[in-house]
Amino acid sequence: MTTDRPLPVIIDCDTGIDDALALLFAIRHPGLDLRAVTCVAGNTDVDGVVRNTLTVLEQAGAPDIPVARGAERPLIESVRRAPVHGQDGMGDLGLPAPARTSADMDAVTLLRREILASPHPVTLIPTAPLTNIALLLRTHPEVVRNIERIVFMGGAVATGNATPVAEFNVWHDPEAAAILLTAGVPITMYGLDVFQRVVVPGPDVRRLRASSEPGTRLAGELLAHRGPVTDEQDPGGGLGDAGAVCAVVDPEGITTELLPVEVSLAPGPTRGQTVVDRRPRPGEAEIHHGTREQPLLDVALGVDVERYVKLWLTAVE
Ligand code: RIB
Ligand code: CA
Image (cartoon, rainbow, N blue to C red; front, top):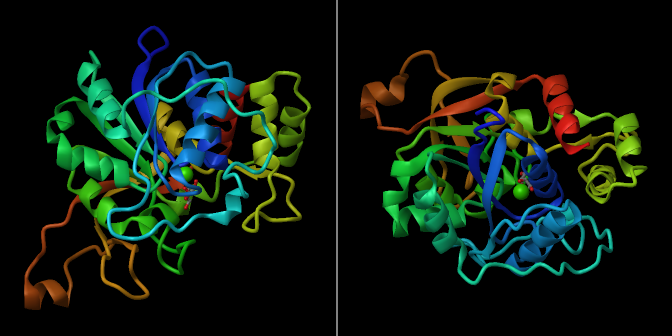
């Protein structure tokens, strides 16, 4: 990726406070060429996601990037919203309805069109439940020939958020996540283990909020949203999904290991868990039942927080 040949990327999102932070970064970083944005139900209903996404692009003065509406609900589960993003799914900031409108095609059609039309392989950045991505891979598997890598925000090696062991995006549609893992292209898992660490300090948030530039001010307002998961004492704001886009621009900022990952689909307390096998060698299960083929993912285990905060602030401001 260079500024004279920006990397073609597509974001699939459920905007969403931190999805909005990811979009602002992707729009403003000179090394990225955001070809399209596709929307899926998750943090809020899919029509709310489309509205929020168009609002972010409008506030940021983005070029006319196509935005398409995707799945209204997961493949199997019902919609289970994430109230941490407020009633409207984007911090209830009271922003005016966008003048921009969504594309006259569905998300899977737009994803296929933009991936196959790109002169250089596309990097796909899902920051939401993976329903659209699963439908794309099952409907148009030929797209994999022009996908460079999928860097998705989802899963967790250690602790979950939606449940003790499951991360929201994977938990919301576990079957879709399992289909993603079999895509047959390089995949980076940007999970909660790194997602929760990248926080913009309070003084920077206050500076952004005071900006006269609408996109910068929006970034500050979004970072300042105090949801139940944020630390009331700490005036800083988590970059969340935006960290996954930082990992596309600057992959050296995360530490990864190529590890087997499996999604637990069984009903019960582990449903939606990403089971990451970090053992140094096979165990008794393999001795007694044989080794099972599992997809290998580049799993993010560490992140240079200051590096990504600086990268994001430099692009957005
Ligand atoms: O678990 C965090 C993820 O769920 C983020 O992508 C957030 O926006 C929600 O979609
Ligand atoms: Ca999201």
